[in-house]
Image (cartoon, rainbow, N blue to C red; front, side):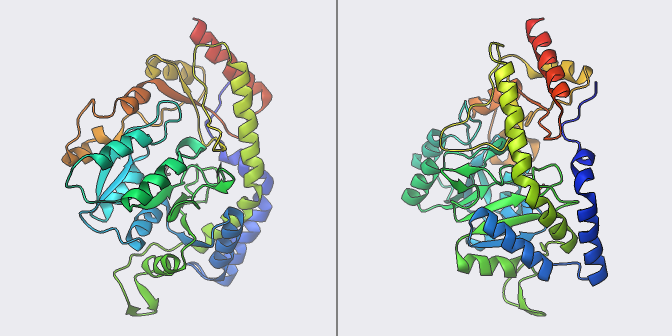
Length: 372
Ligand SMILES: *Cc1c(COP(=O)(O)O)cnc(C)c1O
């Protein structure tokens, strides 16, 4: 059997006609960037998420960078983020000249550790820390009460990296709507994926929303009159209409992901591996279903791959050990939880389109490996 982590062909087939018609509409209109259809999509996202404003942009990385800019983060400012995340979280910080300040993760949730953040903030340093980016990793929310409490005490801006968690809820509120801004990615492999790159920023602050609209579009409010130094980070109209069609199915897809996760949890009980831990404050949309085997993940992943199961490690190297961030001066041992997790975790496929037969095969193969 061959089981891929995500089979977009299976996802798209049943909604193909709807999507084709939407794309044809854009071509007929020849309005390819921003415009009325992007605004309509932004409204639908605002309604869905409960945020007052939604600003469509080029991708999730730019969403993070623009949010930092709109909130007044400047070159040389320190921005706390977890070391155990996708590169773009810290990459966006560095892209505006600010300095990523890494924190360790919680052992059970793999999200940013409040204790680790507190340690950074109470230590005397010259880091000029102005903001924090909690990442809602794998599809569940970080401890936002802990984050927001520290942000009030230390006057930090909060940008949620909701790239993997759009649709998840923290105490009944949607991920990305609790901080000053929330950054969303519509990379094709995300739970709500475009047909190319796209992203979006959520905010409840009108002034910030207005700034973001200017910043994403070359800093001009009226064409050819530039208020500030902006960027070309606009959303393509074709992506907006594709996403607008897919948004209607997002909750059903996420529900199916949850059912698959529950199936794995149930059928892997009694096997010596740790299934995902979900704290009571958050729901989980299972962008990834991540196991922990308490031994090297490399051999385990290779075994699953050999059996045709597309298992991955997100992420094999924490950011503080990446060559590109060497200039920040971190070393091995600085963030033990992240370093340990990177060597022990791996994913099982959690495509909403997976069949019962495929799930049984995956469970059986995991058991085979664990029981030798
Ligand atoms: C996908 C992702 C991003 C970046 O989004 P892009 O749309 O690919 O630029 C940022 N942070 C996290 C945690 C992600 O998973």
